[in-house]
Length: 217
Image 1: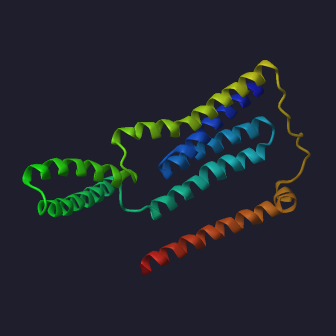
Image 2: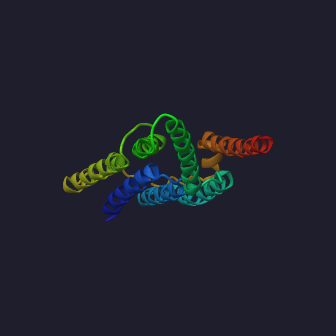
Image 3: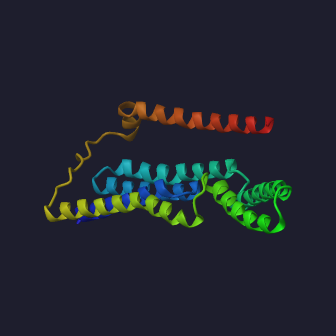
């Protein structure tokens, strides 16, 4: 029964990890990443690593997620998609007006109307996509970006199915040897503890420097 639950959690980890990588919003990615940590903690618990599971779920999917979302909220740019679209529209309108004013000196009114429509479409497509390609081709890029998670999910499903069919045995962790938690943390895993402390201090210093630089600007 535990093996089946582990396989299911591995498949869910594949889905949540892929969603965390492919998501466009950082907050959504952080939430998907928290889900990945939860399933990783469940796998550790089922394999006998109880303390590792506790730290994985409480720290990685809990504390780290809250800190990450708080940092994203504090450093998030004020501009949203509506502001970007408004800026694009203003730039396009300005470019169209300048181009029409130059053409009015050389052409009559009828040619100005025809050429103005063509130039408007060219400027619109070029300003948004970097080249003169039709707006309708956006679906092609979305489909291309969606291929990666589809391939990963299909491969993960195939691997889990093969593992269940051929009764692949997952390596179990050793039984509890009676070590005290303090001895493990500050003795066996002392390097990991110091590494985590350095990462936390580095992140805090980076945020302070970021806000100082932003205030100066």
